[in-house]
Length: 264
Image (cartoon, rainbow, N blue to C red; front, side, top):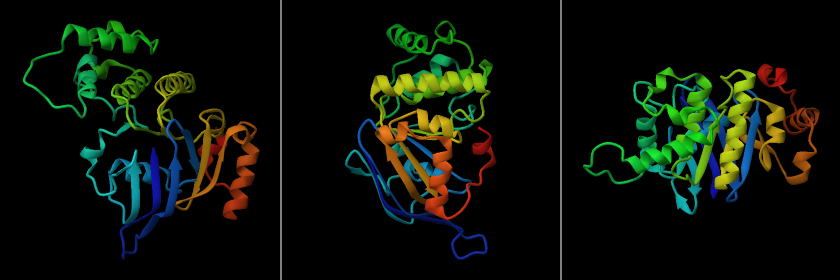
């Protein structure tokens, strides 16, 4: 479902601020893979997601989703393949619009637009049923402005919107990092339910090593723009946080330096 083949990316080339973000990055995901991604600061995790989504152009290499080479496609053309949830709960929704209006925009993504007006009753019923699965009571608040919701509610809504039109690939960029622990656990639980129910191919960046071990069927560790460790199946389930720290030191020759990961 996803092939990243020898992708390179350097920011601010030939300047004093030159930064090699991705260095011959290779990664293959089968359909239905749920891959958690960890790594220290500057490892290239978010850059990788931005390259896939088309936020920045790659310097060289190839990115293929479901057999389609998207390497040179602009961001808006990739949107029909990709669902994405950001770290900031404010980024995935339009605060001044109603819940149902936000969902309607997401539901129409990649579709041809007609001249018909408003949201049909059958469509509202569909949104209510989808919202009810979140267990947050939002199904009775379709006409509320999204700006009135809490951060956790907005992030859960963003996740639902990103998957209303089943994407080929779901990108989760530390989507619980800005939430309090209780809310983060709720959003993670919703994430797992949606991914499993729709059998979505998913890449999830996380700063929490325990979450990285417990969630998904595969774990990838990045360092200096490359994958240095890739583990799946029973071997992944048997991992402890200490094992990950040791693997990082073995693969990189350095101690793991990320205070947020260590604390969590």
